[in-house]
Length: 231
Image 1 (cartoon, one colour):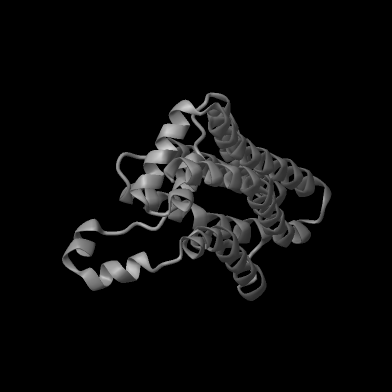
Image 2: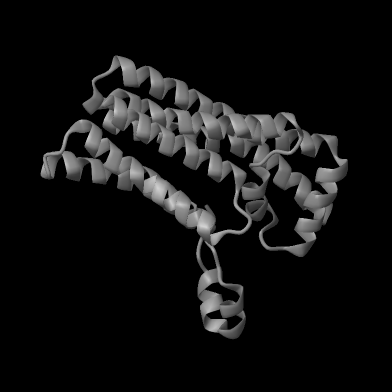
């Protein structure tokens, strides 16, 4: 999900490297969210309202957007990411089952299954002591500083309090995504399909907002420890 920078091009062209470094990582982090939430919703409304396609066909076209993005990401990255492969499998199987069953509600519930896969993987990684969210959090806390990176590595290896906050950060995100899954599946079978088409992305945005708000408490504690260790 991170922006991929061509290292060779950055080395040979200092100006392009300066522009790449100037990209705000918080802005870059919104790109996949826009692709996976806003674009599928736009495709659905265009297919259903403009082209007059049925609910299942329109939802299927919208669901194809994250599938295409995942496949592209897997082709660009070596080796393949196991979590991305799992997400791709869940998406493809969900689309196929929904198409065969002709059930729009199943297609909406499928999106919840994707969140449950991610949330479950994040929770398991935290419980096993290898929190996967740390890879995305680390660049924000070390801020490109070799000293702060070394401090992170020392604390992660030796400081029980730091490791506890690191694991809790992933536990927060895993819980938020699993809660979003439960809400989406429940809504898929109790609310009108047309309502869930726009409410589903709202649920995902709410889960992300909660993850950021609560997770930042533990990220802040980690940042303080890194600052002290690096001083």
